[in-house]
Length: 116
Image (tube, rainbow, N blue to C red):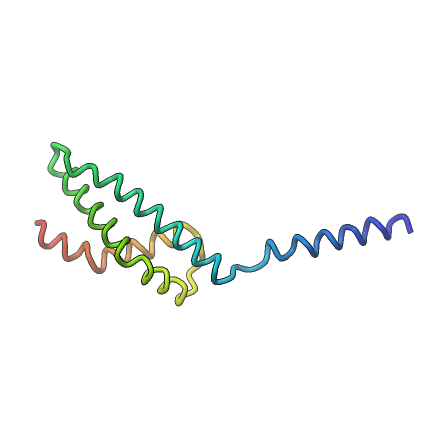
């Protein structure tokens, strides 16, 4: 009897806490993807300040960052939908790689050809 009560209490606590550590549902995935994209947008905007640098290489990097920020803002919902469709694991580095691949395949390749 003495061990039965603590055992039951432990099982009740485990059953209450278990759903919090459950699998990723679509809503938490979307939120993770959106947060990662928002972070990328903020970082790109910060890097865009290099456009006023005296160095031509830094100005080019600033223009690329500004293009990336504009791409992410414009295609944010589409990128999130694509990540959900591919069931991408909601880890920051995987989201960053996905976003960078999409940006490189679309905007940057066109921008780099014009900028040279």
